[in-house]
Image (cartoon, rainbow, N blue to C red; front, side, top):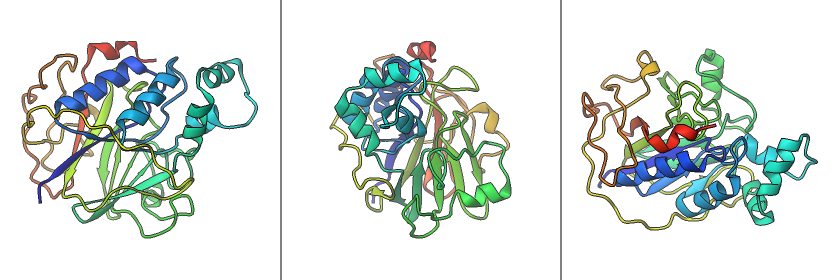
Length: 285
């Protein structure tokens, strides 16, 4: 069976300019399935447009803490929250509220769990520097994830600080942020590659997922994947990974294979944590 490549993004935060640049970079790599790990809205001024783009382009989306904060039905606590909420239509808010808390995928015989922050809820934060107990907790089934079995791979957003770490329980990856990266102004996202084993299954919250992704023309087949990760993850990446960055994604041509990147020879699913070096993203907030 042919390997499938999917992209995982998170924390757009109303930054439409950066969002468009990242989606263009993903499309230029020939990837058509995109999963969004939440916090589409808030902070940036284009929440409604980012919500519409998410509904159009993402195969599935999970609920982030900012979806609860902005689209929830509680009274606004600040003028900023009131403005962000008013910028969304009633339909936008309803769609954001009904997003599931987590999603399960099967890839190369492994159970991948996608969530915004943790299996506790969308507010419980697990930073890059975490304890062994926190690492193990990320793989455990909980009422929030709908029970089931422990995950083999967990991918999440929330902290805007991408990293990749493996341990006895499995592999934990943070995708960083599209619209509000904290370690530098360059957006990041993750590419997974492996043999598909079924589609996404909602695990908590509403049973509804995001609308299916629209079909888009494929660009010519990309070079073999390497594990391109942010430069700060040198001590955490699995063997066989090489650091690199991606070029300007605003070009009409497919990004060239970054110098120094090589194919990953570790077991699939392979991770490709990639930076989208787009000039458009300079307006990140």
